[in-house]
Length: 452
Image (tube, rainbow, N blue to C red):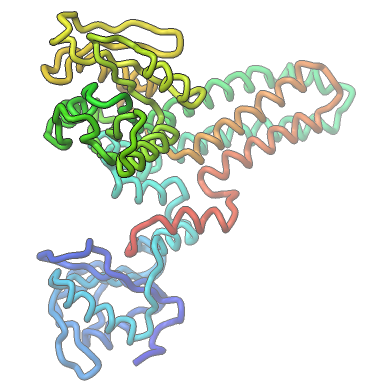
């Protein structure tokens, strides 16, 4: 039965691997009614749940379930879409998928359904990315923000900004025909005021996107220090579980232990590392090397020291070796044994917190300091964002700043003014996908789940 559908028809299992009550296979292409007839013996009505058997090439039922048909263009991908809802056993799902491939479909690549939705104008690029972000959301706050982006809030903010840029560009382009009156004409049209409003709105969008980036990726926090200063105890306290083995024996932790927690919706990826010290133990040496690699990749490092001893020569050696610019908190642990109080105070290159990982005293100070370092403030209007979005917003801001400098210099260079505005608009268009290289699309959608 191959050849019933166009060559670009794709199919994939859309539900997670493993056993389940229901499994879903999604098929997208053009003119899928012959495909449905060959598979089920039925031509289903649009958007109506049809109970049917799914048959093999000999008319024998492979499975039975629900068939849904969404004709183009009123579907997720903008093409004809079939959804086969059968029993969620992996063997059954694979047999049904194999039958779809026999009928002419090809196996979908990761993200290919979302990519087709983008290419067919059903969603823009930020909405497509929000699909993956919603699936990968590590916290409820991240999920809510991803839904806002999926519903188009981020895109609307970018489009509104782009519309203002376009209006200003039209004004500047028209002014180019009157070179002797350019500056006065721009003043009369409030070009300077428009630039100021653009800068303000762009700053507001950047702030909301920055908060969304935190929700999407979180903060990578490494616990470092000498052996037996309480790194594993602090990991257990923050995670609320006995994840790490805690003993008085130096070198108990040989490899990095990881846990993800959340504070006010921000995912914190906590990594407990091997104690940093000189050792002849080959296994421990490997663990220490890995500890330094984790530190180099981290957003912030918590250097733990024993509150009874304070910062010693070995701790200062660790501090001296930390990467330049890495944010850090010196944690004076075991205040319950030192007989001191929980407190926080600033240091030359960071902050210091006195706490007890064993009793929990001072842990809330640490949580709040981590949120402060992350730059988080509680808000409900953020939209999920990625690093590429932030880079594009920064680039757009730089072009708008440059355009303002051209005007304020009173140089007869309206062409430069217009060009900076054009580049700002193009950079914003990269966020939603109006101006996007094919290789970037490949990178973005390759990270999606198969079936999405």
